[in-house]
Image (tube, rainbow, N blue to C red; front, side, top):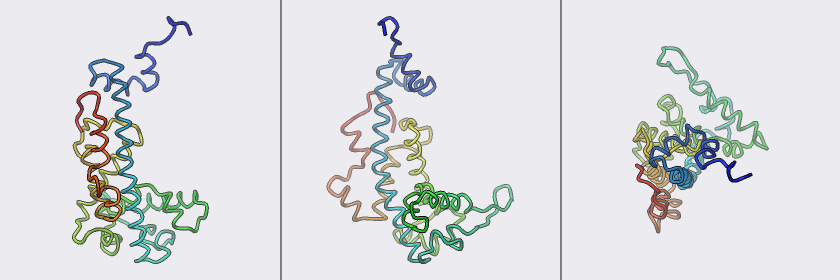
Amino acid sequence: MAEEERPSTLEWAKRWLSPARLAPYLADCGGDVELALALHEWNLALGRAVMMDVAHFELALRNSYARVLRDGLGDGWLLDDSSPLRAPIMRMSKAKKQRDVNLVNRRAIDDAQRRARDHSNADQVVAGLTLGFWVHLTDRSRERDLWIPHLHKAWPVGSDRNDLNARLYAVNQLRNRVAHHERLFDPKDKGLSPRAVDADAVALLRDLHPEAYDRLFGEDPRTGVERFLDGDPAPVGVGL
């Protein structure tokens, strides 16, 4: 391609990222496209740091829940139609209509079961379930069926389900923002601060599995995000 035909950095960056995605980066960087691209790459690297800590936490969450549910319900804890993870749980919606709060999770289990090599192997099905699936299990609508008889046993004595549920939702929301390559800095919702939510994911990991926490953070208590920020600060001033 002749030099005069080569698109400008701004032109190809808009085609790559889309004008809508690039615009806020340009705004944060005073219109400097090179700096905006550097900030975009930094944001993706920040997401990788978040995902590392969330992955450690997610493994602890799903395996802790699977363990206490298996202990309390037996081998059919996940796949039996009578399991409280699958059986219809009817609750009144805000619109004053009866709804089955287990419908979405039941479909998620069925989908993971179809994708598993061995459809009857609960461990393989567990591996195919998302973090969101496990987070939903502490909803208020499942307090009587799951939290009180079973799930509270995975957490330190006296853990408040409502507070815990909010923290779990924030971790899942941040994880989803990373997965969709969204901007993590300067969040409109302070509850989605990558620094704060990542620290909460690490704290929740410690609550669930202190030995794993000691292995990962015992010698250096900084979270993955803190370690990243110490070694790779943002190319422009942003809020975290």
